Image (cartoon, rainbow, N blue to C red; front, side, top):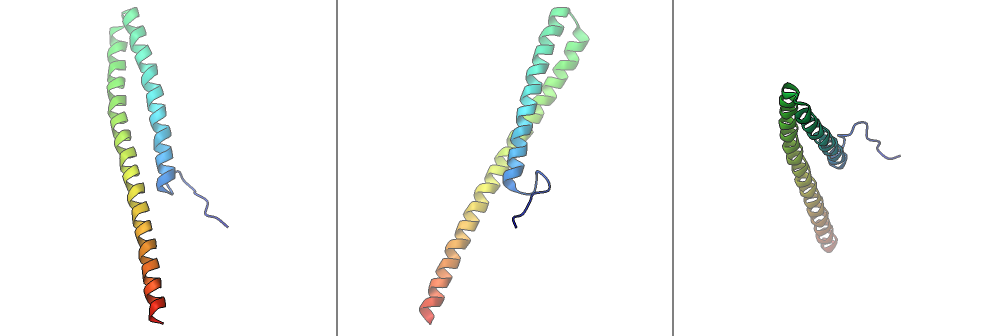
Amino acid sequence: MGYQAETPFDSIESSHEYVAMLAEAVEEARRDVEEGIQAAEREGADRRKEALLLVSYNLAKLNLHITSSRRILNDLRTLRRLLLAERGLHDTDENEVAAGDE
């Protein structure tokens, strides 16, 4: 019976996938906000435009954090693969040495 993930954060891969989906949602929201800014400009709604510019700024900051998180998750995946491969090679070497001692 295989292990079933209970949350999107049970593995590095599923966390990476979740963060990628979050990045897509932020990008979609950013496009919507940009359209709203243009509409507010056309309508002369200065206060709404200022509020949307603040939203746009915060979405840009969030996007930077998400990008950073994706890079960190990629690094962790790479390091885990390297460590597992090293462990596999090390275990194989130990088994060969042990077999040679017999």
